[in-house]
Length: 382
Image (cartoon, rainbow, N blue to C red):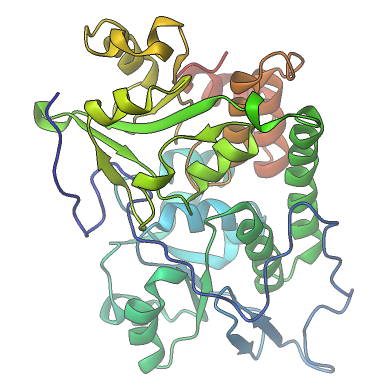
């Protein structure tokens, strides 16, 4: 199997989380998802007697706005993760005026949530102040790894910037709370947090008493075959994909190979040396279930214990894969738990989870989910 030897620093082709995401230490830590949810005061952080708002972002920086922003721009790389999280809040429909669009395009899905979504201005992930300033934003929301580049450039021309991480569950809980402040809807932020917490608690309860020896050795690998050249990559140990495996009761076998930020290229010889108990295949281009069928038919892959035992699965998704730091990650970790430990999660019905997620998080009714989401499912969902 031929391997790609290098990864591009620009936004990757069909790879949503390819940017290095070394997370700076914020002055205020994210609330632990193992602890009770934070309860902001009813007054929020608005200054007394004004409509202003004061927010501490993911980098611990204080952002002071004279009023709740009415023109919000999502910019920079990994824009999908930002806009999909913003649209968990109904206020985003009116207040988000421009979005960054890369390889993964949110329009088809978010048009189900907001029929007027197509009127939003689309920016390139590489757009700078020259393209953003004419939009007259009240604030620009960026992933924190862009703070020193695009963020600094925007601040130089007087455009307020709010940074979010959205890379781990703890960060996700904190950033949702911050976006609730930005949009003036902290009760909705708490609803979102509670939805996620309920499912994480159910996973933790299902894994109660699990010994380290009972955690299967798991490989989660991204597969691509662009131009006929096969690439295998494993995620950074600090990234959501690794944390999903751990939270679902698996032991990632690739820790030593992915200490740096970014996807780490591996080869089949390394996979054979790890010889994991279970393999989960991510594919952003092709249906992961079809990729898995090809791998099962490959003589070299047939030598792996996981393949011989039928323990190789395509990571699910629909419009977007469930492995990445998009709001769908809660579906990903729920599905993983039911696959890694099926005996502990026999009652999990992924169709019910999907209907609940898109209903409670995006306001889609069951008929819309049945017509627009379920037919697009990819990977080994059930």
